[in-house]
Image 1 (cartoon, rainbow over the protein chains, first blue to last red):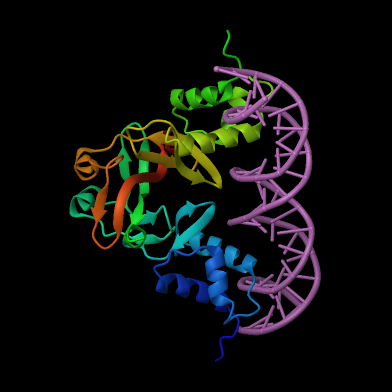
Image 2: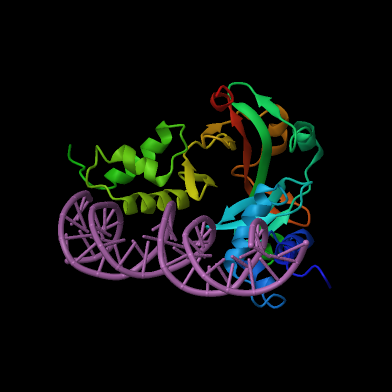
Length: 134
Length: 134
DNA sequence: CTCCGTGCAAATACTTTGCAAAGCG
DNA sequence: CGCTTTGCAAAGTATTTGCACGGAG
């Protein structure tokens, strides 16, 4: 109960991102944390998201309908976005995919005539099972 | 010289997108077309981009620094984004990639427990050759 | 005392929209 | 004429930022 305010909220934002598979937006995080931190402000969430992102702790998955969505999971780079309900799921990357991307993520891969790849982002768009079943 | 205004500007926007590899933003298109269509307004560009997108004629490649970037090329779904200068290049998709995605694009692919993939978007981030050479 | 983190509100920046005018068939 | 397209400017919305305050060491 001693470490009072030092990065308490930043910690909470980070942990929330790590503990969910929702790929949250700033506002989602804000609403989720507001009950426990009544004096939390949206600006702080935005500030900390940018900070955590530049520290490499979290990543921006995509911008969906103008809203940035984040992710703290680092092992999988593939996502499935439901075009109908907006849900974002993690997608297990197939094996032949791995053979191509095995060195990506942290390592650098050269593409002739283009440049050096530092990381990649693979997104599938479609209709999730829930939306298929009405 | 007869068909004067019917979708003349929409046509121009579409053709411009087809003829470039720049993956333009709304403003880029606006500036490019403004000399030839002095009465063009930015709102019209935005409107037509949305319209062309919903018609499936063009696609949104990504949102880079809060700015939406479009593409009218349909055969390749992979892009390279330079994190340093913001340039977006088309990337030739490797063979083993094709084996996985050969049916994607228009067709539908099911992912167990997730949903049906309608299309995919693959983006590589890194440093382009120009930026590597200072 | 000094620094970092924050609330609050104003400011940005891109995009969307309402409306009236103009075009096309 | 009826429907579409557009310019213009106002509105909208997500995000960023300036400033002063508060807590920690």
